[in-house]
Length: 577
Image (cartoon, rainbow, N blue to C red; front, side, top):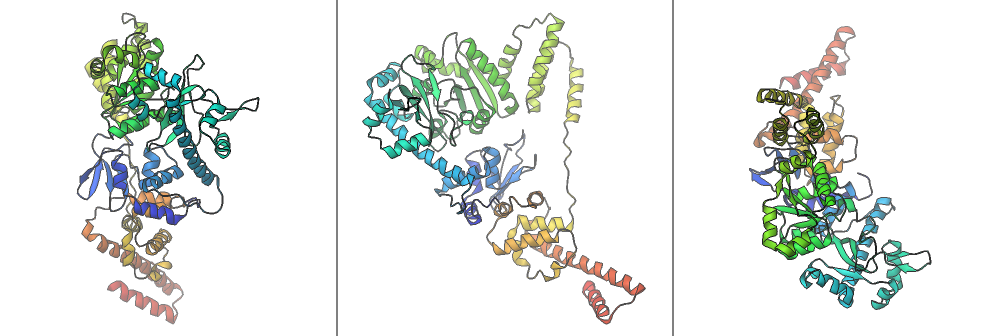
């Protein structure tokens, strides 16, 4: 570990945390015997190979070999760094991180984040109060059809036309003003005058998954350009990683069947107002890989619904190309194509919620949308165009990790182009399957590997070791690692596998420990203790045999001292037992 956060705090955090609860809120687990299983979220898993152990507080995938404790899961699944995963667990338990006294950049980052959370929340509440007091802003939203309930549900506010007006109206103290300036929430212009970057704009607060305000979107009510702006990026706000409206969706449904992705804040609000409770937006920015990962963590079906103009259609096609590498047998995308010059807000006002839901129901599947776009401008009577089509389509199809979907799309492409018959195509698939076989390396199950693996997987076995005196002088490879882990287990009798691995996270031996923690020893639980003790005895016996061989060889050449003769007699007696 880095030493920035005390070990005792991380151990306590892991002790308080049930890995089953944390994973189960993100992917649905099913209890099988004493463990829990599901399809692995880290590879295209057709059968459940992702196993989570309550006893060990540890997860392991038999398909792709990913494994670790709850911290590792958050790092890999949520794409967090180590500190962010500790923050995540701390938030769950309502704890503050007790950084060590030496000031570090990570410690500073943590406190900057806490300060930003506080400041964005404070100014968000002031913006909301200001909306009620400002008739022009309130009338604008009312004219757009936004109800009072939606204004409250999405915490909509308004930033006054000048900071002076806003500051006086709410009696903002100088200390708060300085904090807002220091954290770049408000700014100073060339004339040394304080201003709010959002002044004269409707404010749409952006929330993280816990409902904390992390940034803002602003829509002008005048003719100021640009029409929409977002907060600058901070320690808590990254545009490429935020989904507007997701917090509100999950307040109603923890794991929604769909997520409908639209372009604007008002689109999200108006569709939600019309009982379409699964609408989100990517803050007006292009979809990123991070956005897609977040969307698919929260649903199996993402539906893109953009404006019916050329820009909207181009955005939908661009999004599909970015999404293809994340599509699987269970994760898919669909597309709602709106009429020319219509957007979700305008169309639902014209057609009503029922007709809009029909559009969602009959949304274009990924394959139909793919070929609808890839075939644009293609003359199928031209061999040159067919060649161009295959060159353009195949790299996109091959980026899909699912064998089933990839083969299905290739078959459609083959029929369209007319260059492959069934036999040729099956031959090609067979070749592809052979090329994609993964050869997995399996470690040789030596005595020490098994012994250390059993101890990592069952730290309470350390209680069976009454003395290490016989092992300290052993020349057996791996003994120093075993003794090191044994010492840690004895000092921390309540450690589980997850806590033990966390203790050694940044040590030189962590990769060895992780590998051994996943070994399947094929030993029934009732016999684990017996096997562990037998292994210890076998290692001790091997050491004695090596010493015996040495003494015998020495006796033949040089002879033995009285003490050495006594030693070989004792060894012979012990080995014969």
